[in-house]
Length: 108
Image (cartoon, rainbow, N blue to C red; front, top):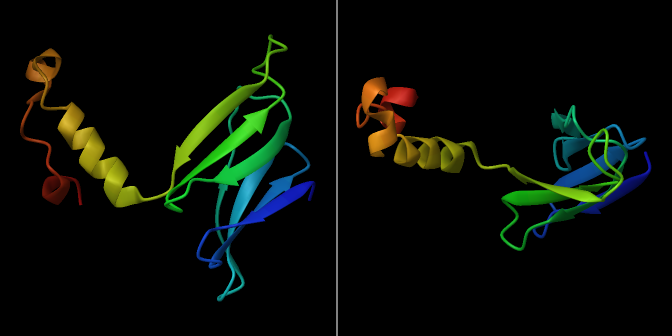
């Protein structure tokens, strides 16, 4: 473990695993929630929770093939991801994909 941070509510801990991935831990249950890995990223150097506790930002030394530091924002609330994806599918560019038929209730 090369770094760690607690969520704003103190219920989740995130660890940086030798720069290769980050793991979310349920502090109360003392269990792993998920491990996040960006296959295009080099060394993860930092992780921060967003103020709402529903997003995290990882900072890496750069994507493979570049040396510039990069940030990746991860959305941790699956309901938000589903809702946002369904909203995006409403656009005219998705008319051939049955736009308007993908809703959070259909997804679940």
